[in-house]
Image 1 (tube, one colour):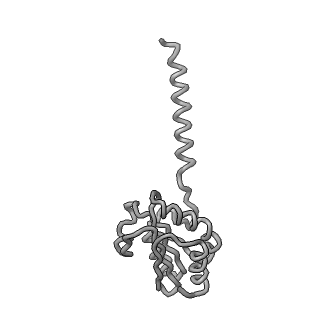
Image 2 (cartoon, one colour):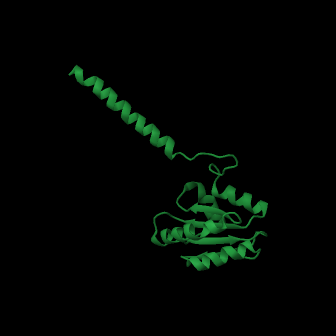
Image 3 (cartoon, helix red, strand yellow):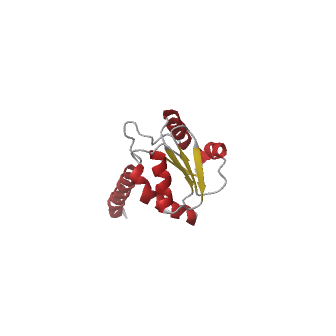
Length: 144
């Protein structure tokens, strides 16, 4: 029926508009100096070169202990974000394969705390919030 075509085209236009809006809204916005397009490995190397205290967090988004640790990091890390760089590493992202081999990560969640001199301390498994806070505080004070 020819009277239906205008309605179909209008509906298709509305659907297309919604899809475009959702795509643009969910796309990462790159800010000047942003690390949006850098891999975790590149970021880590950059922070090591700068001598910046760094917290490297290896995890997946689907294991329960990782999800628990993600929540703890989200709770504690913001207190330290101006002093300590965070390298968030999803172990299932193919872009992180080389870093996983390089860091020899075989268990998740794994947290690595790297001081200004590049020396690291590793913690595997879920940390209590106060233990994470203590490790991050130690990094801000120059220790590991």
